View 1 (cartoon, rainbow, N blue to C red):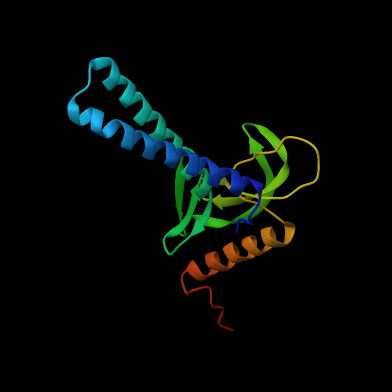
View 2: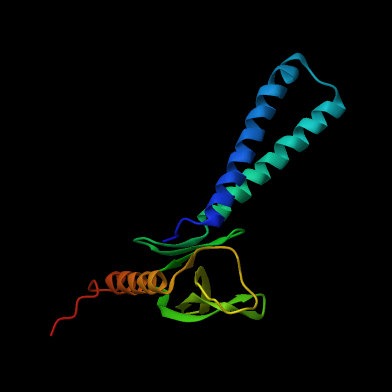
Length: 168
């Protein structure tokens, strides 16, 4: 869950600008490359293409930050890395302060407890408190945050041997 807001509009504009610049670059440079270019022009083209590649990759990664559940486990997708936590390793979920480095922020985050420690998911609960905030990933209302947490707990129970069914 990631409600529509200012950040989504920003990321959409970020992708649109990057895609437009990449298209203009390809249209403008394509014929010149076909005719042949000198070394300096070729180096400029390589730098421009590399810049646009990084631009679009960052824009797309920013949009995809979140926690994804599947049959194999949970995928914690951050801007620079992703981590797949198999259901067999997931022990449960906690709500703790989101962290920037070693510093706690004013927003709570979902933490996934595993056999080798706890991993912060990039899903946070909105907070009106002043202080440090991490501005990547979904920031949910309290109700949506609790729904997400309940959905993760349900998925975890279903993934356990026996399908999470209790027989009495």
